Length: 93
Image (tube, rainbow, N blue to C red; front, side, top):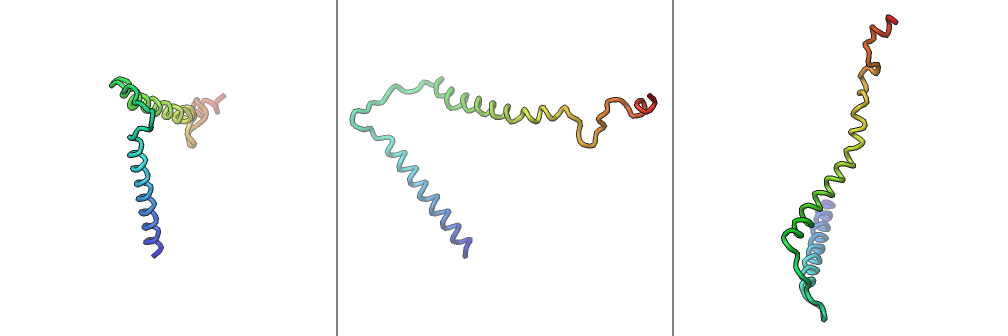
């Protein structure tokens, strides 16, 4: 019974939020008094804002996320020998 109530609540909240989102986008197409539409964006500007900018932001986030892994990769793993020389050479000296 609780899962039914949870599912109903989630469905209801998603329905209400979708209705509000659609209603707000419909209201955005109406002009208020004194508003005039500005010039549209060119194809190059559209590609720049909706393709290049998100790709650049994703690349920067990926780069910043990868820096710690790159810095750790030079250290030996937990089971590896920390001495770069073979142990026989160390013992003979």
